[in-house]
Image: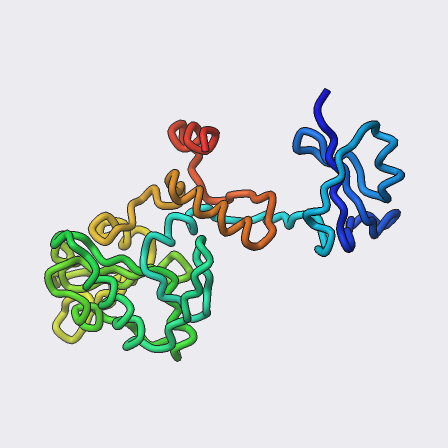
Length: 253
């Protein structure tokens, strides 16, 4: 018969209105049998008392009903968000508050690259907090003129790229007539791309493939670390295409 472990705690918040608090919780084969006092839980039979959490407060895990596991994959890129944010390993990345600060962070990432053809990829840019200033290809050319550089906005629906990225995608030309491709005084794209249909041709050159929403194995594991760090035990992904390869990977991981 499987072992029953009873964990003691300073307090257990059950979220059950008929028994809002308890001091012990019984677990068998990874499943909770019940919460209550030690004497109540001993009615399940022989138990092993574990006091690892004796000075802690325990509560049920959070449920995230609308998530995107792609965040785990995005942490392989350069964080360019406005707010301070912890990565899957717990490192706190300070928010960047200006275009110059974004460029400096991307420059640091570029300097660390050893592959001369590798792209510089950033994510979570949110110019709405910077008085809606537009990041241009000229700004990102300060990061590199020989590497493609791309930064995905927090919305996921806008991307800013440098001149090299536009060149590789065959978009560095005049004559564009699309509301998602703003043009500069020279008639060339400014580097801001609005909407999936204009981001998609450039995405592969700056590290953002069309299947990014699916997350990869490393990204799924990173996302799990983020969940653990926030006490989230259940999530629903509302973006993955769930093709056969993705499902097989998720089941395996």
